[in-house]
Amino acid sequence: MELFDVYSLFNVTPERARGCTVWDDQGQEYLDLYGGHAVISVGHSHPHYVQALKDQLDKIGFYSNSVRNPLQEELARRIGAASGYEDYSLFLDNSGAESNENAAKLASFQTGRDRIIAFRRSFHGRTSGAVAMTDNPAIVSPFNTHHRVSFVDLNDGEAVEDELAKGEVAAVIVEGIQGCGGIHLPQAGFLQALRRLCDRYGAALILDEVQSGYGRTGKFFAHQWAGIRPDIITMGKGIANGFPCGGILISPRFQARKGMLGTTFGGNYLACAGALAVLDIIEQEHLVENALEVGEYIKANLPASPRIREVRGKGLMLGIEFNESVAPLRQALLYDKHIFTGVAGQNMIRLLAPLCLMKAEADRFLEAFNEVIAQ
Ligand SMILES: Cc1ncc(COP(=O)(O)O)c(C=O)c1O
Image (cartoon, rainbow, N blue to C red; front, top):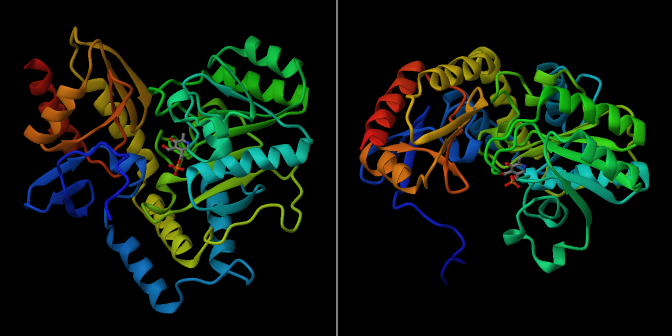
């Protein structure tokens, strides 16, 4: 049997990794400014994280959600304290898409409505509802087009109100910073307007923090720069540093009902052990602060070049938009300079480094980047 061929692959075979460094099967060292697509939050194979998973596996690896799991309770308490959402509750699942799916479902249960407002250039995942809320026709199958989703421009409060006024809107879903769509930031005033509008029209405000959350922008969640409190916050990616895990934070105004949400694997012992170790490391190593400091250092030291159209982002969620396709630049960075970077669309290099990136590593990238764009 062969693999179903859906991924474009670089010709690199990572074999081991530590911190922000990856080694391939030839022993070649790479600097990782992509973090496996924003997943590696505390650095690859952090010893505390590795030990926590090993210790947990020695005790018990899995049981179902039909028994008490104190690790889930501890994780809820710890995420609440780390994020400032102590009064919210936590539902654990397995991925970003599943988190968004659960958030939309919960909003629909609560309001009895079925319309969703999402934004142009959004990405919310690949499952049925999540992909329907994603503004990319290339990945939406006919099966997924039956959801009632309206797309409006980011930062256009009037357009949101026009849609809300048509009625039946269960939720507005917005990314803390649009990632896959090309690092577009919702303005603080716009997020504040969304909060007011959702309250006025009785819709839930869902913040998708799957990519922008967990410290990446220098606050626990990116929307916290705007000082708002959404009704539901969705998480994934960095929450357990690569062990599959997702979750949603739910405002106290939502009432749980037995059987309302559920999952086989969500909140399993290993995911919880990994997620607790991640929070330990984030706190002990001050990684939220580091993400902001090193990210802003990169932004401030990127070269001025007529080839660069704009640099956008916050902390370690950065997009460098060019006037041309970045494919050759990324190849040069990977194969000549041995640096992993991400991409958004054709023209943007996207940096999603582990939150532990050091200034010396940022300098290595800046030097290589200068050389590559001068070629
Ligand atoms: C903002 C956002 N939401 C949701 C997802 C989907 O997450 P997953 O691939 O874990 O389902 C992603 C993944 O890139 C994302 O960036």
